Image 1: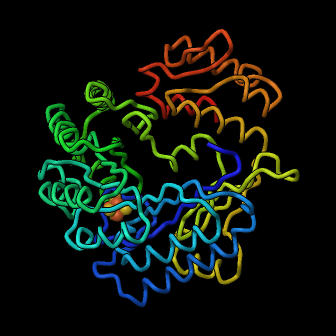
Image 2 (image 1 turned 120 degrees about the vertical axis):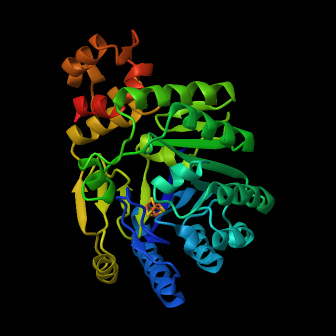
Length: 386
Ligand code: SF4
C-alpha cells in the first residue's frame, strides 16, 4: 500500500429496521424517500468537496460504503458517490458496498455493479433462521442464499460474507454449520464478529434480565478457535482478529485503519484520519456528529464536530494495538523510525506482563505478535497500551 493514496469511507445511516444489538449511528427508514435520499447524498458530496483539499494529490485506493445499510440507496445515488470519489482522487481502487440480504437490494445488484461497485460485503450473520430471529434480523437464511447467488450473477470481483458468533443460544455445532454454509458458497473473504452487547441497546436490557443466554468468555474463545481452524482448512488465512481471506483477497480499505493510513470519512458519524503534516506530525482525527441534523449543520458550515490533534503518545499506543490486531503484528524497526525508539522503550512493563501471560510473543528484533490465546483476548491486551 502506498503512502500517497487515500481511502474514502461513506457512512449511510438508513436501515430497514434497527437490530436490537446495534450501536451504530442509524435511523429506521423502511422505505427511503427519494427526497431524503437526495438530500443526504447532496450533503455527502458537499462534504467531500469541502474536505478533499486535506488529501490533495493522493490516488484513490478504496471507497467503502458502510452504515447503516448503504444498499438502501438507489444505484443512481451510489453512482453519484462513486463518480464524485473518482473525480476527487484519480485511480480505480476497491469500491465496497455493504449489503443486506433483502429482495429490494437483490434487484439492485446489477445497478450497483454498473455504478462502479466491485466488491460487496454481505451481512449474512448466520445461515440459521432461529439465530437470525434471536438477533432481530429482518432476513432469513433463504434470503442470504438468494442474495449471495445474485451477487455472483451480477459479476462483482470480490464477495465477502459477515458472520456473527456468540449469538444468543448459539452452539458450537451452530457455528460449525454457519461456517460450512459460508465455505460452500466460496466467498473471497469472511469477516467473523463476536456479538458485543453495548450499553443502552435492547440486548443490554435483555442481558441485565438474564434473558440473552449468549456464550460466556471461554465458550466464545472456543468458537473463535473453531472458526480459525475450520476456515484455515478451507484455505482462508486469518489476517486480522475478525477477518479471513483467500490469498491476495484481503480487504484493501480495512487495512488502512490497522496501518494508520489516511482515510477521508464523510457522512453521519464518519471519522477521518487526515495525513500527517509538518505542523501535526502524527496526523489529525476528525469525527462527525452521530445526529443527522447536527451533521448537516456541520457540512453547511464547513466544519467537523470534533477535531483531535494526535499526540506522539496517542499515536504510539494506536500504532501498537492496531498492528497487534493483524497476524503480521508490530515491526519494531518502522515503529522506531516513526517514534525515535523501539516499542520496549515506551511499553517495557506491559510487554513483559503480556509475555509472562503468554498473550504476546517478541522476536529478538523486538517485533511483537499476539499468541493464538492473545488473539482471542485481543481487547483486554490492547488495554495494556492505552
Ligand atoms: S442492519 Fe446493521 S447497521 Fe442496520 S440496525 Fe442492523 S446491525 Fe445496525
